[in-house]
Image (cartoon, rainbow, N blue to C red):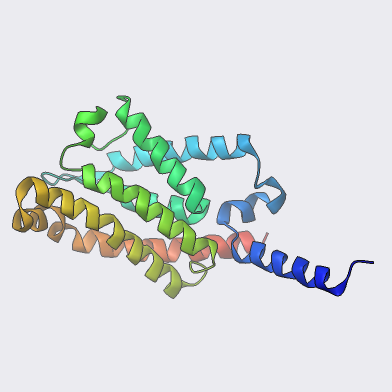
Length: 206
């Protein structure tokens, strides 16, 4: 019979695992969390979703408004910080290789060094932080998801604004890269705050 300390340690480990689960692991079952094939398919599907969301856009110069920021945050929240960040990195690699996955018709390293470059970096940071917080259950409630998605959008905008400011100056960067997106960002934050708790609830009902 194992000593009581072993039971306590096992219980703590099980609680830690439950506390850091992801939507994807919850949907597939914890036993599938280490499947390389599953993760590869998720990354591939995630990059496809990001490419599609980049094409759903309202034209603004020099940075188009798309549904991509919401897709980035949902992927991070659903996949967790490691797989979420890896998915965004894979998406950026596709774009760097010339695949038409970005907003508009541009692709390649040159496009990534243009006005949208800071936002692309922000995608990785936002997905990782959103995923980290979601793994710990903060997106299971509407208020928690609202805070996490709002924080994710803020983190995403910071490198986007700083990169634009280095290209166009602080005032113009704010005018073209931040101010036009207040309403859209608020709407997408609200949508994310509704979708994520609903997904947790639906999966929990299974």
